[in-house]
Each structure stands twice: as C-alpha cells, then as structure tokens.
Image (cartoon, rainbow, N blue to C red; front, side, top):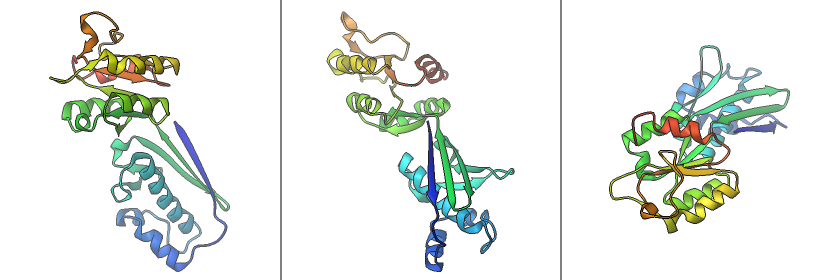
Length: 221
C-alpha cells in the first residue's frame, strides 16, 4: 500500500518553531540535515519531523524509537528496519511530498509476536505486525481494511471451534478474501475436526498461497 502526503509550506518557520522541530529529532538525524540556514534546511527539517509523525501513527511505535537516516546515495531510510516501510521525501517550491509504502499489515496475537520462532516467521513475510487479540477482532480488522491478513499459529492447549470461526470464514469470503488452516486446507465445518487446533491464516488483497509458504518456511507447523 502506498500513501502520499502533500504539504504546502506557506511561510517560513520562526526560531522558536525551528527549535521545537529540532527537539523532535535524534542527534544522528540532525547531523544528516543540510547546513542550517541554507535553502534546503527548513524543508528537510520539516520533512523528517512529519515523516516520523506519520510512521508513528501508522505503526503505533513511539516517535522516539523511529529514526530517519540516509543511505550512501542519500535515499532516506527508516530505522528500525523491521518496520518494513519504504519512504521518499522530496520538495518542489513550497510543496513538500512524503511517500510511504508498506507491504501491508498482518494481525497477530500479542503473545505470539513475542515468541522468537513465530516472530521470525512474521519478519520473513515483510509485513508489519499489528497486535490484535482473539479471532473475531482479527477478522474485523481485515474487513475494515486496517490489515491485509491475520494469522494464529498452533499452540498446545489452544484451539478454535466452529462457532468461533464460521461467521468469520463467510465474511472474509464475501469480501473477496480467504481463510484456511496453516496447512492450506479449508477450516472444517463438519465432523470431528470442528475443534480446530492447526492454526489459521486469513487474507484479503494479498496472495494467500505465497504468504502461507512464507509463514511455513521455518519448518512444518
């Protein structure tokens, strides 16, 4: 998903405003700004602060923990890199343009994000992990377009019953998505397996088969 933000800078910032904006940046970020007082200093300063704010709002990560750096070729990059965002900051005249692209979001239970094996599986997908508890809130997040996928990894003592997922399966399908076990099979609607213990993956506007393969790349789930 690509989002583009366009800002028109109608007047120069005051010394007080400049001091405030600088206080929003880390010392390493300030070092990469153009020379203070130069033509590009002001727009670069505003661009970095606005980018941090936008990324923070998108990921719910504190601005203090987000750094806007540069590659050797001068391309802006976001740290930490596991936020999986690609950014572009440019300006023309009085206009500042910030482009942010992410590979989508995947809803994951908070305790599973913290698990080293499950966490590594999520990182390999290139998706941004969004903490969402329980099956129904995950499905709702997909239907609202807040995430493009949701996963629950199998764990001892955990299961999902037919009455937990039946409505969710139908809704995801009606919205053009898919939900399956992590083995790729449809979730059972009859028989002894209606208490499902093999984990599940729901997707919408993202390649379900490819994501399954990526999530299973660390071994059989």
